[in-house]
Image (tube, rainbow, N blue to C red; front, side, top):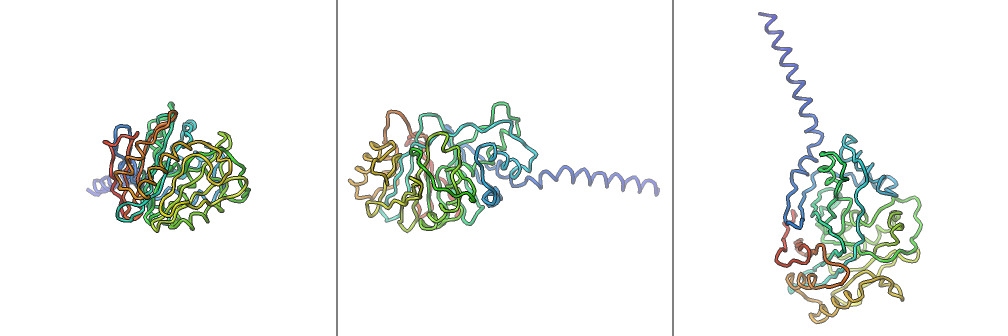
Length: 352
């Protein structure tokens, strides 16, 4: 009888060990599993929505030297987000330049609308990413990252965990919004002891840590620019606005950081040429004038529908809108429209 009881105890102990071993990955990867489980397609273009659970280690990334190329970034993301157990087998696909049209205006209730077209000549599916890490919760749009063709099944799925590091535009719970727009490369200020960031990661830093335009501008002294921006002979400037109605464009130009104030009291337009440059080097002047004329005709006041209509009607013979967003910085609402398709506009529920 005692032998019987002893055998049962051994079997129970073995079962407990097996259960622990089986449950350990679930415990360790619980946030990653919850994040990937939250992904849903909200438009067939496609556009996906993802609620990012837990940390994505951006504070740790800022304590490193950042990344001078994609390989450095991938190595960091593999080690932090999947604890080094899941490895990518090649580089992520090259990200396009953001040839964009953006403007800030007010609606009929005096609320601040931040309006953004991301325009490209190539197909760019996107992911709306909600995050709860950092000082502020955020919502923003990223390029959908596609793993290399020879990647494993796990890698193809876990690549979406990297999305916060590829933020093209967004808004945080403090009512601050930012996006980047491509401009020709210019000499950048030296900041050798600072982490190295891409434009996507600059947007991520600002959304995580700034509540006002002034706070966002101060962050531009805390990093240097990633070398990959130089290789493509392009840089970016950044349109930033907050719910108080403050707005500005930050341009890294001629070896310094310039802050360009709006020329109108209640609206501002930005495309792909330098605003603080006598030569206006860059592109998008026709798009800029088109939007400026439309805003002037409305005294800088538009409904959400009118703002979306304006974004959808911006035309350029060489590019098209991949996605368009309207962020209400006063109320925290977000709308996204794929490929200038007004009938497919989606209102996104923001969790704050």
